[in-house]
Amino acid sequence: MKYRWGLLLRFQHVFFFFVFILITFFTENYFLDTPELIWSVLSVIIFNIGIYYLVYYYLVPQFYLSNKYPEFIIYALICFLVSSLFRILLEPTVFNMNFNETLSNTKFLFNVYIAQGIIILVASFLGITKDKFLIEQNVVDLGEQKEQLYLDLLKSKMNPHFLLNTLNNMYANSFVSSAKTSDSILQLSKLLQYIIYDSGREKISLAQEFSSIHSLAKLYQLKYDNQLNIDFDIQNDETLDVVEIPPSIFLTLFENALKHSGIGLEPGSFIKVLYSIKERDIFFEIINSINTKRPVEDTGYNGLGNEAINQILEKYYSGKYDFSSNLIENDEYKTTLKINLNG
Image (cartoon, rainbow, N blue to C red; front, side, top):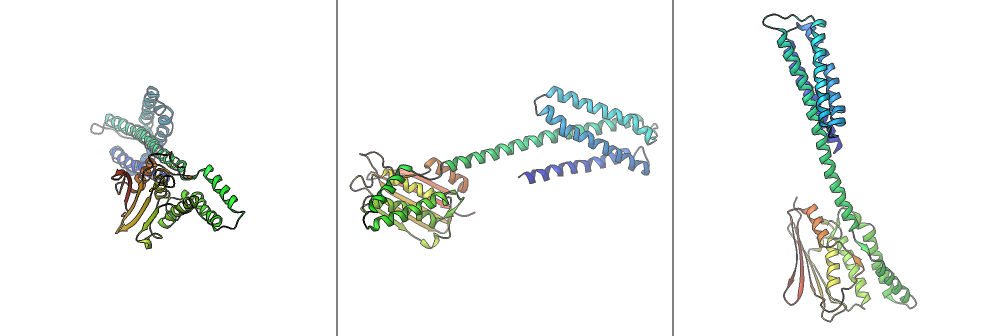
């Protein structure tokens, strides 16, 4: 971004002085012959480069951008008058300009005033717009950084109480030979790997996302002796290693279903997860029962929340996704996410 802006600003300076050289050449051409004309044009350009950068790099930042508008106007007028007077007094003498009835000194004065006015006005305009553009770009960059920091803060984290409870359960089971202990360690390590490494990436494969979902589901199943009604319908599984999405989106939706379904707490509670892909459209759907009697279950995983999910989807798939969470018949809750991967 800085390189692009720097290149554009340099191009503006070069283009302006190219045009200014042509103007100076054709206006001075009426008063001087070729040998002296070239030296006159060079001296005018060198002199005005100093005036230009004085206004551009000093007057504009020091006074205009500091909201000292009267001082800026006064100093700009002083630059105009001093530079014009300098040229009016020196150029006719140094370069032996000959004035007559056709090419009067009035025309020379007019040319000098116009040239110096252009220099100061253009330097002021470019100096002001440069800082305005850079300030606006900084605001945009800061907004993006703020958004990224906000999303990073909302990234998935393991609840410490859940982690301690899981470790305590492993410790209790470790006194007897149990496959449950080793399975718990395996699933917890997978989930921790996802949280520590994968959730910090910009995008991960669907295979990684579903691996974390299965790990969380298995830890939950182990907690309730594998009696939970959690059903996965994963279609087009050959696409899981190919398609990538921002991390934690599907996992958070599954965590929300675990938390609010009452599964493990109420008889008849269930969760159904469906994934499919048609052409370039991802379909992810969760239907779950609703916990109406008991406190919300602590799943141990703190996800993003729907608001943050919408922000992530808007950032990566603006205008290319449909996300809805609604209560449907039979006191069930349905969450549907469709993402178009084109473009």
